[in-house]
Length: 469
Image 1 (tube, helix red, strand yellow):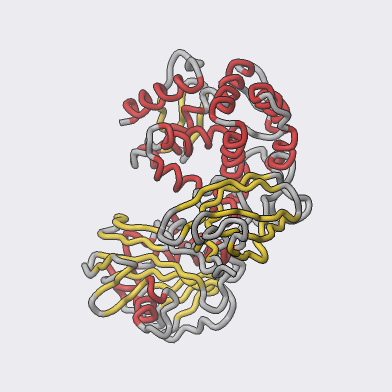
Image 2: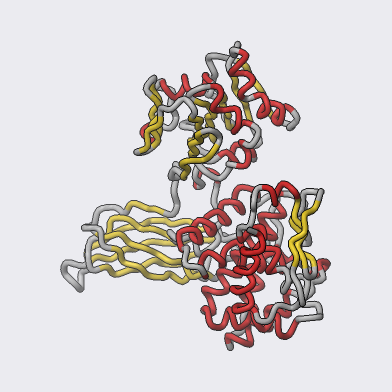
C-alpha cells in the first residue's frame, strides 16, 4: 500500500517540481508517533502506518519535503515558508491535480476554519514569525494560513507564473538556503510584477481582512429598463488589504452571475449592474480569499466548543453502569483539561453564556423536546430514531455527534453526543476529538457513515438582498 502510494506521489510531483533530488526513497516505521520528512526517507509512527495513512496530508506531505526542506533549505530563524508551501502542494493541490475538486474545496474551507478557530486578533502573529509547530495556533498560522497565502498568490499571478515560480525555487534553491525575500523576488520575476505589496500584507503582517458589508440596496437601473443595480459599501479595518473577492449573485429564476470585486481602501463602493433581479449575494463562496471570521460566522462544530473560554460538560445525574462505561474514556480525557465544568444533572440549565457538551441519554432527551432542541429543523429526535436533514437512522448500533449554535448566544456552541444504545457510543468515545470539524457525524459500529456542516447562524458569505426600489 505504501509503496504503491509513494510511486503515485513521485510521478505527480516529479512532473510538477522536477527530478527527484535523491537516489532512493524509503518509508520507515518509527516506534515514536511521528510524521517526519528526512533526506531520502520518511519516518512515520506505528499508529500512522497501521491505519494505512497514505493520504496526501500524511505520506504525500513528507514526500514533497524531499524538495522543500530536504533539498531546498530554509533557516527557520528567518521564518518558515517550507511547511506552508508543502501543505499547499500536498494537503491541498494533490486533490485538485487528480481532479477531485470537491475534496479540494473542502480542504480550502477547512484551512479557513482552522485559522479562524485557533487564532484570534489577540493571539495571532505574522507568518514571517512562524518557526515550527508546537501548538494548534502555530499549525493554523504556519501551515493553514501560509498554504492559503500561496493559494492567493496563485490566484493573483495565474497558474503559469505560479508553478513556474515554484519550479524556480527548486532550480535556484537546491543545496542552499531560501527565505521569504527570495520567494518574493522569484515570483515577482516570473510574473513580471512587483509583488512587494502582496508579501508585505500577507507575510509581514498579522491577521486577515475583516470585511463588513454596509447599506446594500437593489435599485432599478434608470438607464436600462428591466435591469438592476446592486449598490453598497464595503468597509475594512485600517490598514486595509488589497484584495480580489469573487462574488456570485443568484438571480430570480436560479441563474448565477459571477464577477470579481477589487478592494484596496478602508471604504470601497459596490456598484454592479445585473440583467435580472438579484436575490442573493454570495461572497467568496468557494473560500478563495482568507478572511477573519467571528465565531458566530463559522459553522457549529466540536472544535468551537473545545476552544471556548467557557466550557461545560453535562452527563446524566445517575447513569446506569452500561451507559457510564460507554463514555468513560471521553470523561477521562476531559477531567485532565483545565477550565472545564462537569455537571451531572437530568435538568441542565443552558441559560448562561458559554459552550456546552451534553453526553449520553440526557443529550437525547434534550433533543427530543421541541422547546429545548437548539438544532430546530436541522435535527429531529424521537423514540423512532434520529433524522438529520434528510437522513433517518434508527439502528441500535448508531451514535451521533451534533453541534448547533447556542440559540441565545450564537458565539457559543451546544454539542450533543449520544447513541441509540450505550454500546454504540463506546468505540467513538475515546476518539471523539478527532471529529471536531463537522456539525454532524453519524457512526455505525464506530465508523463514520455520514457527516456534514450546518450553516452558521450569522453568515457573512450569503446575503439576502432587499427588494428593488
